Image 1 (cartoon, rainbow, N blue to C red):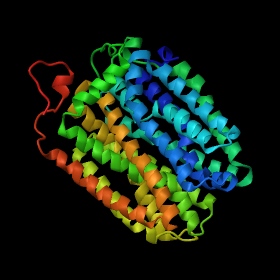
Image 2 (cartoon, rainbow, N blue to C red; image 1 turned 135 degrees about the vertical axis):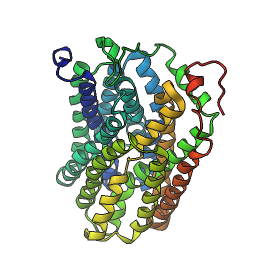
Image 3 (spheres, helix red, strand yellow; image 1 turned 90 degrees about the vertical axis):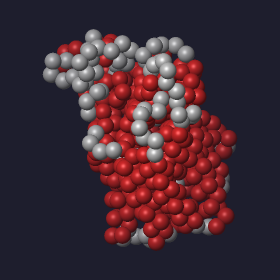
Image 4 (cartoon, rainbow, N blue to C red; image 1 turned 180 degrees about the vertical axis):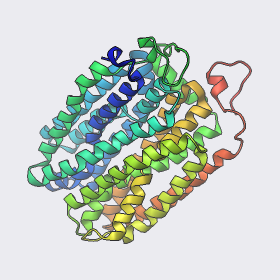
Length: 431
């Protein structure tokens, strides 16, 4: 298939398209928790903090799996890792219909689906763009990152309607079926490296050999060891941890329950969250385009500052109906949702060279640690105070702090931090 269209379309674009579809298939579960929190609470009587704990385990493993998945893609190939990840998502989501205890919820939602989705996290995007593209990397990073948002856009309203008209179990089975449906496409069309086809990456002039196989865990840990000696890594990881806390952890998990607290129906709230996904697609693709043209440090500072301001205003916008002010928030916040990803990927590549995808996996792990902490903390705030307002205010202030961390990357900007060391150049030392 790839060979037959080689003269018309560079295979990199086909690989990118298949990756986009795979990310949509895995995104089904990313939309599930916020829709199912209240149905699970109503049926089993579990506190919101307990259900949020399962989401936190998922978010944590989603992040911690990413750097090892990037290294495993070097060892076993992208196709095998992605196909296995989709099977894990399907298994974890499908088996939830049989669960009876909160421990089973944590095992299925948290562990199985966390590992599966983590294997297809943003480190997967960084691996695809790093291997297959030299030109248009920022744009393709934005498009692939938007795959998750597209999945949210597709699944959230569908799942909300299924829960309302049928049951949460039907919604879980739909997610499992969607993940399974993508597996044959991945096995058929996804390729591991341009050199497998005897071609250079898109925009390159020569065929590069694939990365060395073997020692996936050693490569992942080694990348963390070397990167953690640099100031740039901690600034990127700190900012991205706050990014995770203010998106997946807080808004992605608790927006629907918070809106429901103010009298809004869950279907309406889910539609608003899906609209965030719609605007996120445009915002992330635009961010990729901007990343190819402007300094990523400036972009990150602007994104985080604007996000912080919008979250500080959010508690005043909730109501029992959708008002124009809430629509403005949805538009603004959606454009900024994961616009941070393309510039962060670009900075990891700038500072850490050939190991940038694996290092980004660790930076993404910090994103999910922040998301996990926020998901649990917001659930506790709601259980203790009866409202979410404090969580929104703290998140807004943290996002403004992340803007400062991003702009601090300008200090000591001269010279790449780790690229020479990680590429094996002698006489270079991290700083």
